[in-house]
Length: 190
Ligand SMILES: Cc1cn([C@H]2C[C@H](O)[C@@H](COP(=O)(O)OP(=O)(O)OP(=O)(O)O)O2)c(=O)[nH]c1=O
Image (tube, rainbow, N blue to C red):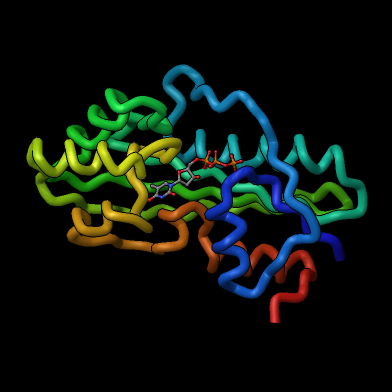
C-alpha cells in the first residue's frame, strides 16, 4: 500500500520515520490557511488538516494520504506561523509566563476516499520570559515558520516548564494517533 505524506514539513517526515514509517512519496498541499471569522482553534486545526488531505488525495488514486496541521492557541486566539521577528516577538510576549494549547490534527484518507481524523490537544507552560531571553531567541531564527513563534524541539525547550500531552504532537505530528489511523486503514506499522 502506497503512503503519501501531504506535507512540506521536514519535521513531519522525521517524526513518521521515528515510528518506522517511510512514505512512498511526499507531496505537499498548498492551501489557504487563513482562519475563518470566529473559528475556534480545534475546528481550525481539524479543518486545515482535512483540506490538505483532500487536495492531495485527488492527485493520488489508490494511495493512502496522510496530512496534519499544528496550531498554537491562547484561549480562543489562533497564533500565526511567525514569518517576521515582530510577529514572533508578539507571540513570545503573549506566551510568556502562561499556559497555552497546542492542537495537532491528523487526517488519513484511504484509497476508497474514506477520511479518518484525530485531534491531539496538548498544554504547554512557558516560564516568564525577560527581554534578554526573547531577544536571544529571536536571534536564533528558530521561530521562523513555526506556529506560535517557537519550536519545542530546539532552544525553546529551555523555556518550557511543563507539557501535558504528546511531545510529537507539539512538534507537528501526534505519533500515537497517527499510528492508530494507519493501522485502522490496514497500513503495516510493525
Ligand atoms: C509549536 C510548534 C510548532 N512547530 C511547527 C510544526 C509545523 O511545521 C508548524 C505548523 O505549521 P503547519 O501548517 O502545521 O505545517 P507546515 O506548514 O510546516 O507544513 P504542511 O502544511 O506542508 O504540512 O509549526 C514546531 O516545529 N515545533 C513546535 O514546538
